Image (cartoon, rainbow, N blue to C red; front, side):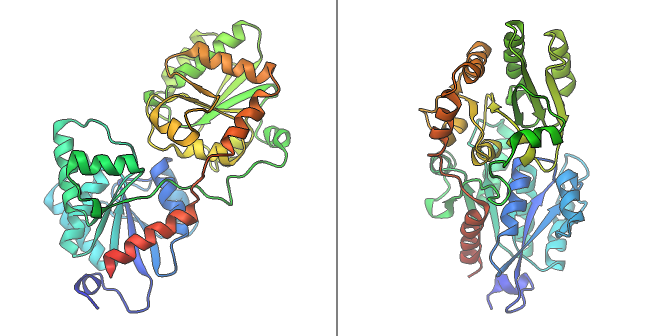
Length: 377
């Protein structure tokens, strides 16, 4: 048994504990990814989830379902101290954690430093495309990359940028895409019945599942709905998600005279029925990595309209007929109207989406387990 295994307290033949580290687990793509992938890890590994500040909605939900979600309250504020890092390292050793896996900024800091103190490997997962960071945050990110045992990138492009921009050795980087749960995200057998069960109206129903945050660009959806309503077209938008921008978006809907045509559904679990009930899934974001909700909509067989940005194009392909520019509400409204007037339009979107290769959670989990095994060998 090697030194890493001894320090992790691994018992020969027992599953090795992998801790996915978060400040908290609200409804979000990284949290969903970890919960789904953790379900499918090979028998040699056991997924645990460490919340450093609070459980969050997904954390509470997973805990109530019997998943091993732990509250290790070492991060009560935005400040991080050596004592907090040491306390988390002590917890890792006490719980006999064999490896840590982090996906967000503050989790990277805790996971990579505490793992070193505990003598176990750490996996830093860069789940988004790289963007320009403020100087201090970039310095911290570079330090986390250097301390990590291995780095997982969302795409080959991000992997290349980690090497060219941050000097991460190619041998230290693996590409693992986001994955979704195959048993959950499938076309609905009866969309109209599902819509009635959810209390959603008839007529053209568009919608999305995303945080109410400026970079998701929900204001463009509201503006497009207002334009169609002004022309006499019956259309309703349902926004599934919560966020700091909710009041601002509700005010915008009232100001544009479409408060009755925009449903703020809030955070919903499970999200699959809300996607399956739609006529069109709309994602007008100004920035995305590899959006899980977009993959979920494709898997559910829902025609997609999405902004022509890197993350969306990487999923759908540059020739997808439902792409529009993120600042053009008129173009989005035109595509919505096309789906009503042209019976061939939505089937054409679906036909293109059938070419999308969907990474499933069980496949992604196999890739992660292979990386974990190599670090613990």
